Length: 346
Image 1 (cartoon, rainbow, N blue to C red):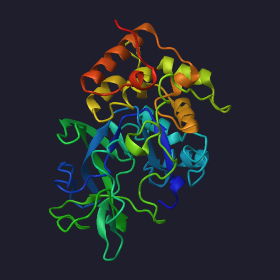
Image 2: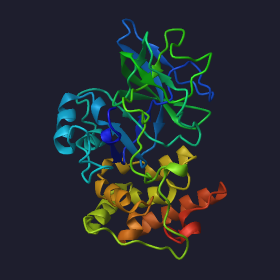
Image 3: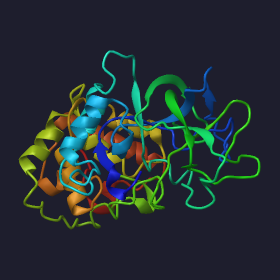
Image 4: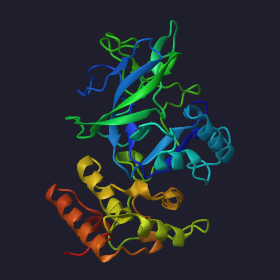
């Protein structure tokens, strides 16, 4: 990374998060190692699957497919500044990830990118995480690496685990967790850190925008204000017709998952199985205008309310069920907090 705007924002697809991978067992107790293959050019990294729905980010400098990289640079400029979040366009790499065309012809389930989805469970290190003095050691660069599902669940986070094939490099880098005496820059047993390098000292995670739609904790944009909801107007550059079309076309077994995802994602982020139930299928349909709207107004899970989009009967009933499931877990839903996305009892 050479500038903060190098991270372009995307939404809708399930992704792999390798930001914390490296040691056999991390300081957080997760088992997400990166094992070097013979020859050391590739590391097989165990990473977390993040369900669809959350905003995620791609470093424009680390897109591994040349065709998609060039398309993205043409659309976003070389530094990414013309695309979200710094600009107004949605980066072509987002659509390549959504449609599974980043690695055409290969058996790929997910793509490794960056997300703040686990920041509340595994805080991102901002100090004591740099390996920038010589002699340099090898690390895995997992941004946009291809990944396959394993079916295993991490007991610490509750997220599914995936296996990613990450190219390796020798040079300076920063890692996602704090280094310790036992887990320093060079790891034992044929393992390496999943890492990246920021040349400008701003960290290897997005620092733009000020808040991130649908992200948990203090990194995330707020929900609509309390009941009765204060609903901002859609900015003039946003098409509410397109926003509602994206919601209404997000069909999975008759349910418009854009609405069910909004009813669950921003309140139940610590329960990945529930989020997956609410959001599965969102990646089958583009949601770029929804992302543009939420970025523009700085709100989370709010685009349908701002544009006055209306879910169908089956979707409203599923929203009610998901709200009931959240209530059973002690979660205050959007319906509880601002009177929106309440659904209807079947």
